[in-house]
Image (cartoon, rainbow, N blue to C red; front, side, top):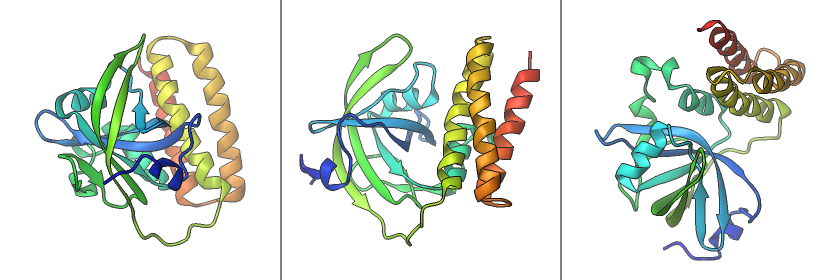
Length: 216
């Protein structure tokens, strides 16, 4: 059973936003997942998906899910840009059943927080979900020495999700500022992690951005 002091035991502190991938079931029982910033306060976990997202639709239906912590940038990429996958959906073989709630979780994650949604708080563009964690589980993973290319590639993916939204809304100045950051991170990745999975992800992101700019 999850205890109130577990957040700090896991290294999660109040006032900080942690990047993770949140997974849940859609109404047709198809698993879905999306990158999402999460925060903790007291005994609750909070996520704030945009109102138009498939993730929010799934969470409204199932009222439970899993926060998956991972350092794999490819997982962030294929869950952020689902259209890149066959049938436009996250591959089912990435998932396994959660232990305490009816939700999917990503097999290769290093830390799981399974949760139930306790409240939906309406905001301007988003809905804030207050969640009760029902189970936490850390997987046994090999050591992963720090490489700046890893975190730079994940930053590129996070920025790209906003770039796409800004382009769709014709907010080109905001999109341009984030694109400048993505290009900065590409230079960093190419310097510290050339010809790596990290550089491949960043190249994919930049090709996506160019395609979005050309789409009416």
